[in-house]
Figure 1 (cartoon, rainbow over the protein chains, first blue to last red):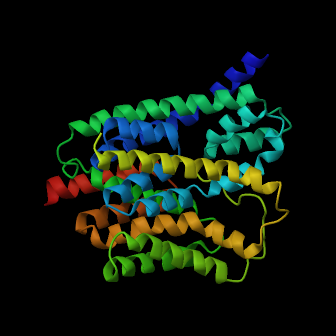
Figure 2 (cartoon, one colour; figure 1 turned 45 degrees about the horizontal axis):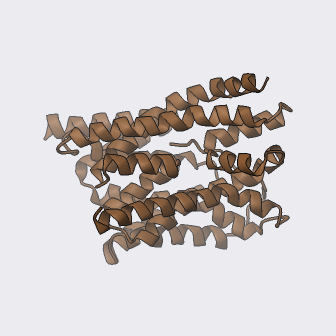
Length: 239
Length: 104
């Protein structure tokens, strides 16, 4: 029974693993391009395990941003997980402490979405199911990072094969994924203008904190939207 | 291991700890707090878009003609056809390669 649940989770996570694989490889290649060794890239995928924030991390590291700001940015990009873990609390309360430790470590966007969906349908959210779903995404993520990093090591000039354009477009795609959120356009407009101004007048890497702060302050100052929700507003696609 | 590389290892560990804190944070907080103040929630909701935009806008403005064009084309097509991020990346990559190897 427990084994069946594990494999049910594996089957559920399999298509998500396939979708995330190119991003694992992309991360590996870009990490090496930004001054990581292959081992560093694999280590980051295995310990941080959050695609978008890993990309942000290597981008800032490559630009010699101060370490505290790199960590803060990783924290900021991953902040949505606070909402996820609050939201699935009701479904995983029966896990043991050790099981919770692993469960929250593996809590990526699709894991959250599936757990929530399963719980709402009244299906049991068991630890074997959760683990099967999580591990079938986790281990290939590390393996694809390794493949990408080895490939990245072989590339001489990343510009000649167009690698340099991938990160900004990737981030642009992530930004667009948030477009259903309240006040999306004003926040993005203010952050865009403030970050370009910050780049121009203060210089990199400060444009990141200046631009981000401007958008966040705007969101806090605008009158609250009519529909105030306590659960996560949107499920963003990881990677 | 040279000190600079050691610093990178520490940086990755710090990033991993920060990420783990966000993943357990909600579970821990939900037992403490009944409701998040609306303004704080609005601010938190704005965090990802605001942070990520700062990585996009300067690249578009200062990245050069080829980068700006490929970003714009990828954006326009992905928005119009509601494409995934992966397809958007492929479009942007094709455009930048065309500009670099055929046009210029």
